[in-house]
Image (cartoon, rainbow, N blue to C red; front, side, top):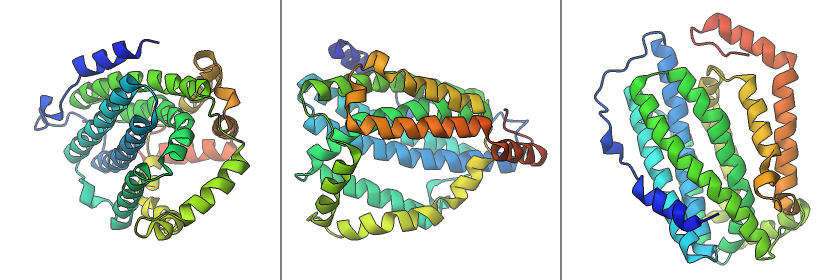
Length: 306
């Protein structure tokens, strides 16, 4: 893989949020106002995830051993921030802004972003880099294979589709570099230990972090995240998620070794892969899921398709 070509392409095809006419009227006649608001809440949540992704790319930029790759990951961080800004604009057109999310949801994202930025500058940044070298691919494949198709299907709106095409263009380059990063980690002979060993090492690191309230935030983030994401969860439940999206996502994950042959030798690969496989099978086979889909179908104009 020629990463200089990816860098050149990223710089050449960089776009701006201001390229779009956000004042154009929304063309979603078949989607209820309530469902548009649900779409907006999910977009706001995804914009928060994008900013967290930007912090991971900055960590990779600091700890990767190739100067071109380092520059490229900084460009990717800018991409993620731009995606987040675009998703805020898309949500605004559908009737919701960032401050409409529960304060506890917004606080969760703020805490996670702050702590990742502080970890990047600490002696523990290299450990997060090693862990994220594999995990970021799972996340981006999920964004590309499940989240984006679901939102695009739910919107089916000309302006929004133009924006998604630009985001998808960036994400394809990100995913290509994610494969490169896995192989790069292997070639540097810093393969992950098994998941249990990693957890034993991370716990004392979290406990001894020197930046303010890091231990407190690490302990309380799950507590504030669960109620904070309930509203977004309810909104996401009304999305037109197809079981085939999960099946396709599992196929992407299953085929990772075809492009990154040494991925199975990294400890942070096996556990997420098994989890994703089980979730995919559950979504496809579960009577509970199908019953839930039928209930949504009877209550919403925009129904999931299975």
